[in-house]
Image (tube, rainbow, N blue to C red; front, top):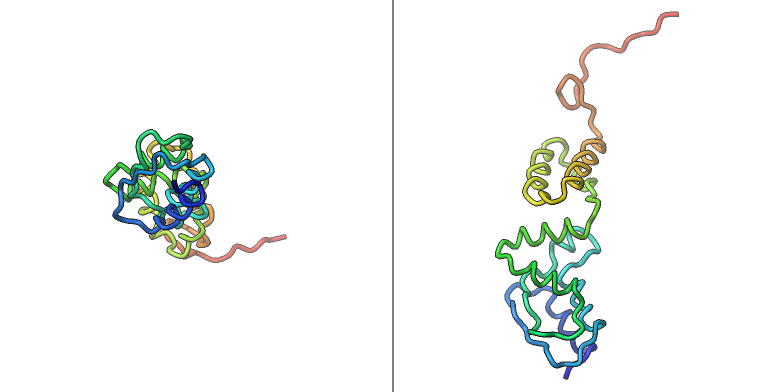
Amino acid sequence: NIGDQGVATVAQSLRGNRRLRNMNLTENNITATGWNAFSPVLCDTSSINATHGSNHTLQTLGDYCDNMPRDIETLLRMNYNQDKSLVAAKKILQTHHHLDMKPLLDWGLDLLPRVVAWLDRFAESRPDLKLSSIFEFVRAMPTEVGNGVAGKRNGTKRRRYN
């Protein structure tokens, strides 16, 4: 019987796990508090990078686990998918309702096709997020676009006549 404190230690040890898929923790007197220790391990919501680096391998913690919160069950079920990039993307889209595009701005407009492709691949169920993310990315671009060419201006400044 490891209880809540023991399962919290086990959960933390699985943070970097990339191999263990099944673990049986049934009949260990684990309450909802103990099960919730797996939440940040399976889906760390502190940042998009942290969510991407979460455990996408662990699939089961035992059959008929009493008091296991539904969100933990959902995260474990998501990990059944063999495409771990897809699992990571779905967790990101599920937990980060607004994608911060500012870290991508250093790449400039060259990155826009990749951003759109990523959102097309993974955000098919979230068209609102897809459109708002693209809008935020383009709106925050520091370069000026004129005559279809980024960063270049044609012509001279007009003078105002009085």
